[in-house]
Image (cartoon, rainbow, N blue to C red):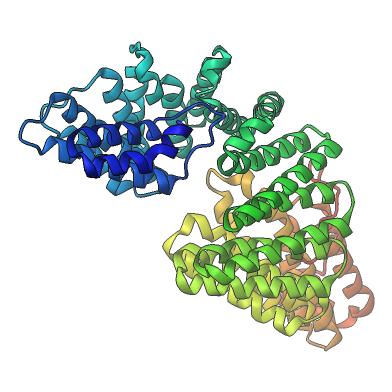
Amino acid sequence: MGLVRTLLPLSREAARLSPRPGRQWHGAALMRCLTPGWVLLRPASPQRRVAWAEEAVAVYRALVETEEPSPRHRDLLARSLVQHASALLLVGRCEESCTAMDASLAVPGARWSPARRTHLLHLRAQAQFDLGRRDDALVSAGECVSAYRSLLPTRRDRALGGLPGALRTYALVSAALDRTEESVAAYEECAGLLRTMSVRELGRVALLRVRVLSELTNRLRALGRYEEALSVGLEARDATDPITLWASRGTVRPVRVRLLVDLARCLEATGDLPAARTSAEKAVDEARTLTGRDRRAGESLLITALDCLADQLGALGEPGAESIARRETVDVSDALVAERPDVYDPLLATCLERLADCHKAAGDVRAAVWASEREVAVRRRAANLDPAGHEPQLAAALSDLSSIRQDDGDLDRAIGDAREAVALTRRLAESDWSAHHSLTARRLRVLGRALRCNGDHEAAVACYAESESILGDESAGPGRDRHAADLAVTRSGLALALEAAARAHLADGRTDEAVTALRSLLALTRRTDRTGVHVRCLRAFALARAEHRDTVVSAWTRATGEDFPTFVYRWSGTGSKDRLPDGN
């Protein structure tokens, strides 16, 4: 086929000088160039394949439009249109590809073998998948798999594909529809078929083999089957030998980067952190090599590989190296955002979020604030372009920024960020109550902590009380266990706020307000088994009795008609004796 490519200018000139025989020769040469060849011959670029296919269609259309077209020319026109459809798929022109498929079926008098019809059905499934018509694609892919199972292709038809390729398409569509188990079963069947092929047969499907094994590794990891994923992933890594990598480097290297990342994640999950780090470092090296050849494709994969490497470095206790990797992900994302902010802003925001977490874990609060502020700015920009898609992330980022500002002592700005996060989450809950109502409780808790630290105890109590009410409502439904931890943390924060409010009121001589806070604290103690809450209640009442006995006892009696409690701690044989973190 390499020689045929070289002779294309000669056949093109022959078609110009001798229309009928020259066109036949030129058309045959073009179709030969469009037919997949041996793995050692590097495939042509997708753009060149599109050009060849368009030229082949024009040649055979001219032959069919002569006075006495032969049936073979009609067959070849239909075949060239199928090749055109296949080439258009490679460059993402899916609608045009579907049009070419329809045109091939509409060629009058064209003869179709079962293998060619099945191949066309496979292309249609791929086009439907790329167009987002996943249900239609699943039906087409299923029909294609069934057809190939009962088909015995001739030697001439093998270049069109077969059952392994159809199974891979079916697996891809199933995975996109969250039918993970079904997807894995299709991948495993496909991998089994590929393992039984001879070396000669594998020469035609070397790239398919790499893709199938790599994608199966990813799907097994998604199911938590890490040992199986490692076994398949190592087989996939061995399949990307230097020859295959050289022949299809533009296609295989991105697959290899993703595979090495998946292997690192599986090794991390199985506890082999040094090996996970090594795999992640290899993924970074591969991504850097790819970036040198295709910057746009390489940089997005480089971010994924660096993020994986940073996770391994963090797990191994190397915060300095982790921070360097995180900063590089931000730098690379910045370069991508400069070209396509609408596409890459969310990626940059995620990288900044993880950098902020890294700085916070290392104790560098100022750097964490800087990264979190940038994240908020990027997410706000994305939300302005697509509110529905990015406002939830903006609300979360504002809440995180407020927490970091509180650690930095910048309480006024922390309160402002938290208020905006609460307001935005309330608005989101109006349109999607189930997704955002419980999040409102969390954001209220962050605001409550900021207000308490700033001395606004009444407002802090109101935030925590509303948060408890929301989580109490949520816990009454089927998600009770899901919200138990959040509810416990909220009640711990409410106890802290009520204790602080009681102390502040007593210190200022506002005895009636102090009694109100103490009564609320006692009621909270009666409805929770958390020992930390009980201890706060006991301490608050003991302090009130010891330092303000003359005023607080009479105020209590006036408000309740009862004597001031002498013992408020309620023993619980089932409650946790662990004190919850303060101020959350």
